[in-house]
Amino acid sequence: MALNDHRMPGFGDLAGDSSHPNSPDYREPMYGEDDAEGDVANKLIESGDVAELVSDVRGALAALDWACAQTNVPRHLQQSFRSITARAKLLNRMVEAQVGVMS
Image: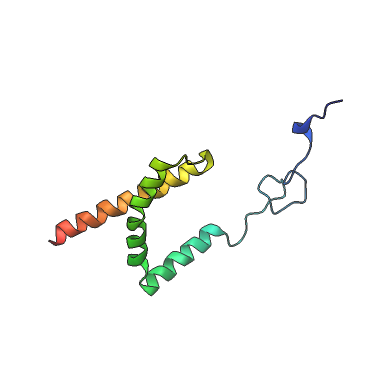
């Protein structure tokens, strides 16, 4: 007799599992990753490390382009590569435009 797996409860499907978004008992955490990312961004601003982060992301553009061209990026990582590459290109254009304004 074959099992009908789609009818079997899995992780997060059981009532009482308030830690998984698929559970009917799920509750949004009071402090989540979005909150932590905002706090980290604020700390970077306060410490003056934002410029270094912009520089690092811009500097990674060539490595990201090379990795995309030379390797077969797994499907589950492709969106992340596209996203960070687009951010690096945007930051690069913004810095170049600012240099043009200030020159």
